[in-house]
Amino acid sequence: MKDWYDPASNSPVGCTTAVPISSGKYKECGILLCWRMAYRIVECAAKIALSNRYGMLDVTDYYTIEMNSTHKSTAGKLAAVLRGIPRVELAHTPTPLEYMPRLSAKYDGIELYVKRDDCTGLGFGGNKVRQIEFYLGDALDKGCDTVLSTGAVQSNYMRTIAAAASNLGLECHIQLEDRVDNQSTDYQNSGNRMLTGMFGAAIHHYADGEDEQGADGEINRIADELKQKGRKPYVIPLMPVKEPKGALGYMVAAQELIEQFAQQKFAPDLIVVGSGSGLTHAGLLFGLRLHGSSVAVLGVCVRRNKALQFSRIKSHCSNLSAMLKLSTLVKDEDIWTDDSALAPGYGQMSALVNRAIQMAATCEGLLLDPVYSGKTLACAIKLIEDGSLSRFRKIVVIHTGGAPAIFAYRNEMARIGQIDQSR
Image (cartoon, rainbow, N blue to C red; front, top):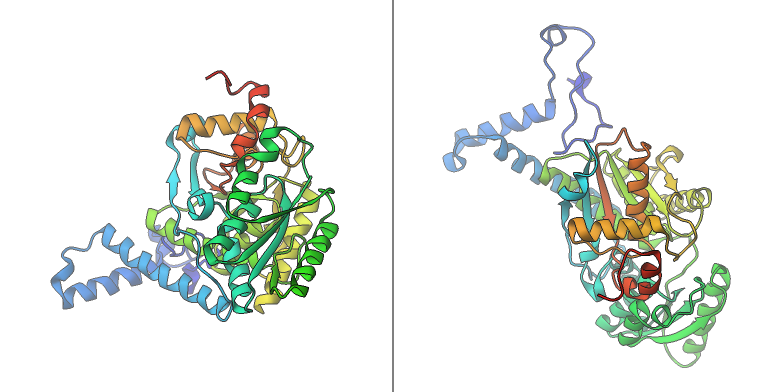
C-alpha cells in the first residue's frame, strides 16, 4: 500500500491524496484509493459493530473522526517541540477562519478566506498577541517586573506589549521611533499611540527610524538604568536574534489553521501574510512545514524590499531550527516574498492599499490597517488581477489586525479620495 502514499500532499482532512500504482489491477480498474481513509472507515465500522451509539456511518461521521485524529496528531507534535518553553496565554484562540463570499465573487474561480487574527482579544487584538505570549512567558519565568521594547509611533506591537504589561501587572517602557515622515496630529497622537499611553506605558523617543541596531541599543541602555534602580527589566528586541521567540506564536497558529482546514473540509492553495519583522511569516511557514503541510506561503513586504525580506525570513527559520534542535524544515524555495504593495514605503498610504481597505470594508465589513493588513490584501488583489496567482484557487489571507491605525491615517485616506471627511 505504500505505493499509494504521498507524504507531501496537503489534504483537507489530514489524509493523503491517492496516487495510482504504476501497474496491477488497481490501475486497470482505474480506482484511486486513499489507504488512510480506508483504514478510518474500517475502524469506524468496527466500532459501530461493537456499539450502536453512533447510528449509520456517513461522511460527517468520517470527517469528525478524522478531524479529531488530526487534532491529536498536530497538538502532540507541537507540544513535544515546545516542551519546556515558558508561555503565558493571552490570546483568544482559535480565531475564526471565514469565507469572504462578496470579495470572492469579484474574481472568477477564486475563493478567498480570511484568518481573523484581528480577533485575538487583548488590547484591540492582532497578530502580536500570539508573539508576546512567549516573550512575556520568558520574562515571568525569569522573575522580571518590567518589559521594554521599541517600534514605530503607530506600532501595533508597542500597543500590544503595553496592553499585556498592564494585564500582567508589569511596568512597561516603550520607545517610539520616527520611521514615518508624518507629523500630523492624528498620526502623532491618536490610534495606537494614544492606546499605548492609555495602557500606562512610559514613552521614550528615538529619532532615527531606520537604525534597528541603534534603537535596540538605546532601549537596552534604558533597561540598564532601570536595573540600577532595582528593577528587573526584560527587553523584547527589534533586530533578528538567535532565539526568535515571537515566531513560536505562529507555529501554534499553524497548528490551529491545519485543524480548521480539517474541520471545514478544504485545502488552501496559498496563504498570504504580511511580512515586517518577519516573525509571523517565519513562524507560520516553519509551523506548517513541521506538520507536513506543503501549502505555499506568500509574505507581503511592508517595510523592506523582497530580497532583504527573503534573507530575514531565512535567518529566522534557521534560528528556529537551531533553537528547537530540529533539522532544516524550510527550504529556500519555500520562502516567497513580494513587494508589489510596498511603495511608497513603510507606513505610507497608496491608492492600491486604500482601494483594498475600502473593498474589505464594503464587501465584508472588515477593517484593515494601512501599514500591515491593508498592504497584505492589496498585494493579494494586485497579483490576482494581473494573473500572477492564476494557479491558486483557494487563498487564505491572514488578518493581522491593526484597526486603531486607521484613525491615525484619516487625512491620508481622505486625500487619496476614498473617504469623504464630511460624512
